[in-house]
Length: 208
Image (cartoon, helix red, strand yellow):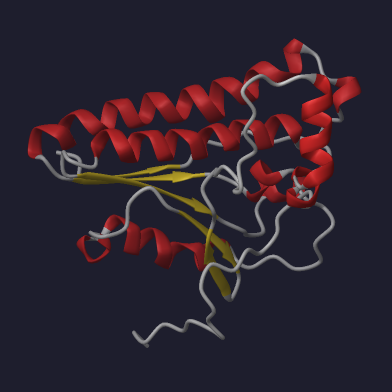
């Protein structure tokens, strides 16, 4: 019997685009994507038999873009996409799929983002995983929870920015005009950003 899965497959290393080879890339794909899929596929079968379960994938802030971490970030972006897809597939079958984007001082983090002076202890990420595995989070599905020490937030899903430009037949000139008239102004900044959906000064837990 399997009630929950923490799907924490990770292989990380830094490499710039010009130095990458297929030999360098394959270990990240095998561990971070194929490993994640295989573990989830194995765990979900007994969950489906019971009609209940929770899968918590582990992604990374690198999926939003980080210099030197393009391949690692891409694999963790794939984990995010898998989370969204599996949550949709399984939502009417009693199984929830969420993901955590953790931050901690580990051997892997020392190979990743070396610009931060402070990283919280690994166990600071445990409570959110416990919550997502528990029945208390029954209403939470298809979400990525970003952890950063004392801060916790939900990540946005991929989305189409509105307004949407429309043309019966796009040409180079009409595409150029659409960008000049508004699409250029809709561009999002590179890297992780905070996007406010609803105004809150702060959200604090009341379970202390």
